[in-house]
Length: 453
Image (cartoon, rainbow, N blue to C red; front, top):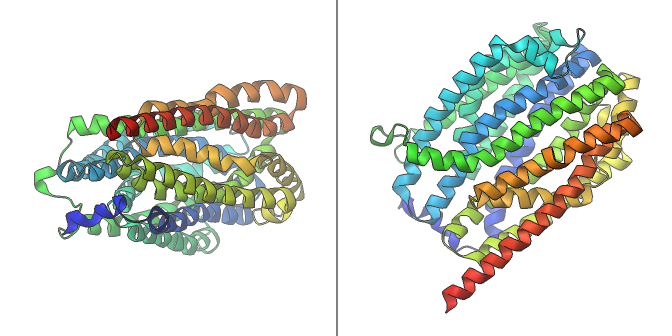
């Protein structure tokens, strides 16, 4: 029976489960990062260095959009995995319709407000007279298709945790492939410039969304849309949104921090400094997305076994995920420290921009040998549905540590001070994460001893 499908999460060897669930997620997340990188490469090579800076200015707004998407999508996916662990199948099915309806509602509101105040928003985010036209041309199509983006990512997360990680992976790979074909067509053949890249993005997501909807409308699937469960259950919605609030606030905090970073770079280094940050962000993002692929693979396993109170399996999948994540971030450290010029050169031919980006990347990745563990700890609390702790961890790096560093260090080191703020905040966040993890482990041990009595 379909309802027996999730039971493997509580019985199969953890290493085999992590490989099964993480590998498709890694491929999907790596493909997603390539998907973002393709836009930057074609825009940089086809539209020039100022277009790269204009694209970098849009990152905070796109992060803000992603924040509201994760509020629904990640919260719904995490709640689904926990409910499956508790064998509460009816409630798990109701989460699906909640994710669909709430994504549409939030997407409409976000799009309307953003389009209404687009120019002031982009200027606040660091756009100058030279980069505003590029940023505006890119964001108008992106915002027009915002509902599609929210539905695509939200529903794909549900597909992944409901026992179909391969299908979720294929949807992402399909999106990347179509976008990679449409980008050069719209930019170079149709001469649409940076706007063509945005249109290509929305079209590719639209095609992938159609396929995901077909999967979720199939009554043979474990989770599928049905008239009886279609609608918003506000009790489920509140619980789902409370879980999704952690990654949402993390993205919101990231949005405001990137706004501050952009403006600091603009003040101390000009438009090209913002472009250099945008390039290094895209490169580092590849490795961070692979780590997030591991955490996504960890999520249903940790969530299910936490719901089933199998704490030894919860910690086992955590430790294995940390090892994998640290291997990935070590590779990023090697690339960033020893081959930065070769890496940044794929985005631009401008020698000044290459110099600035390569220098910044060396500083950015200087502590990446340990950053993998910090990322896994943060997502570990989210995977268990421990909303308040996950929110706290999400905000400490962005607001409690990074913002003060961004204010103080540039006064002494100029542009380099902005770059140094990033690894400094990573180290401080890791210390806090380790303290909270130790407390959680003590709680697991105490509950296990009480059950044994």
